[in-house]
Length: 298
Image 1 (cartoon, rainbow, N blue to C red):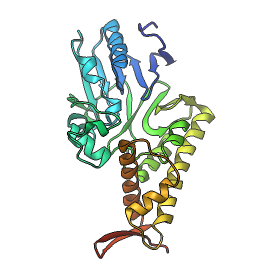
Image 2: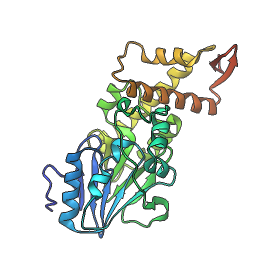
Image 3: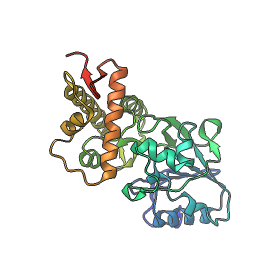
Image 4: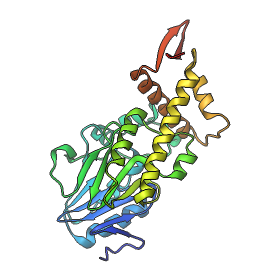
């Protein structure tokens, strides 16, 4: 089927992919489904062309509230001739609609007025429907961890896993993967591992399309990265360490390229300490004006 966009990859019956970082999944059913429109003027024009060519009512699904997955939406919906609605999960809806909440949850700093520090930025996007309340032709699967309400989308034989899983190159380039709650991210990866059989194709938001044994290997690689990250945090906490000491130990000789990247790494560490505390692996105490994390098995 010709949807009028060059480079569109057909993954299955009526399931197409616009490759990028993030990739965008398109499902041509009774309605048109656009999953994670991404960012940039080129991506917006491509998606708008598909919508206008098919002329169907359109549902835009945002898998989670990060700006790089939704920045293109206002450019897509402006002036189109068909109805287009935006849907997100109940937990992530506030981050889609309110940039200040999105920025605070993602980076841990109130950066309004200092958006030049961010890797990506997007305006407020109105959410017309909550995913949990909809009956759709595609299936949504909760995959929390990267954000509290992240979902994956199953369309035919394709699983779009958003940022529950990363390609190998992303894992190599980002020191340790960003997840607001690494423990819940591990649970989501294990859930993904149980979904990728039966010839299904796995699409990470950032990374190459994989299937079969390659999909299993990528899931296991992501699990390994998170488990090693958590183990290293517990080790660095030792008999008592402050947050900056643990962060420096994690970074080692790695070079961080931007303030935005460093803030994401800080948030990943906060998430790791919180979930290790829930597990009873680390504890925290305040003494003499400093807050120290301590491994409880030491």
